[in-house]
Image (cartoon, rainbow, N blue to C red; front, side, top):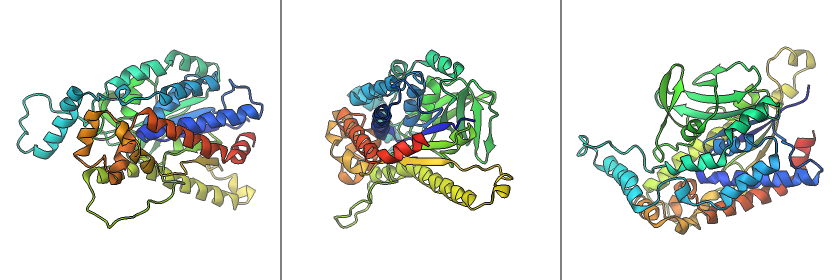
Length: 387
């Protein structure tokens, strides 16, 4: 039986631009190796948060991988924050300013007459962007024709407290249930991506139909105990994971006496824990399982449901927080003003900004970093795909 290759695209807001650079470099490496430009190297594509948007856009063009990568490049090379959230003064006042006021003076405003703000930012512009990026009827076609085995995106239910993986496939695959996480076969739509990418507190939750009722869902990176598992459940024998920080990047350099952390510094640390730490832990877990399985005699290996999974991880070699700190000035003035109030425009608060910097100056630098990191590991890439 032919081995199935899975792709895992992690979350991270604007940091997901790095993934596009990696994918572009992989496309170039495989083309130089003689692969047809249209050939899709991934049978199973899984994504979370902003990675879910990239994953779905790529899956929609599984009949032409180069075209899918180019479509992503066109978007991320020309990004502006207004494509993702309201960045004008009125929009910021209606969402961010009211939300921060309610957070600070909620005891005074508990009888707010109008509908209370639901998030720091209003992401309604993202709906239009998703409709331009995606070709969902084409996704149905590539699945039916066997050009793609499965697509999976994840979200987290605020209502039920579970981590939910939605998967779409033409094959018969039984949904799986694990502790605090479930899988559901469904027709992937814009609403799933809005939910999966709803960064907690930053963007509003999205209602999704789960188990016969609507539940409000947010970013799929929350409570994501095993980010790699959906690809394995869907049949992947080898998996390429594209991270968005902390795995390979150097540690932060402390050049000043420690000061009490700003709200932005705490929020950025919390988001990094949500988006990055579970992936690092799951990679370590898979490597330990592979090591254990390699020590088993064949007769014992045949008796276990576990299987070795070939793994390739590509992650930033530079600190994305540091890169973000150089581009905070490119944010729209109303957003900059609001974020400055919580310390996000300071260097030590740039981690929070790194998730919201949907500006081409920042995303282009991340794309170039992804390209460099991948070409530096060309031998590993070729060994992975030619194995």
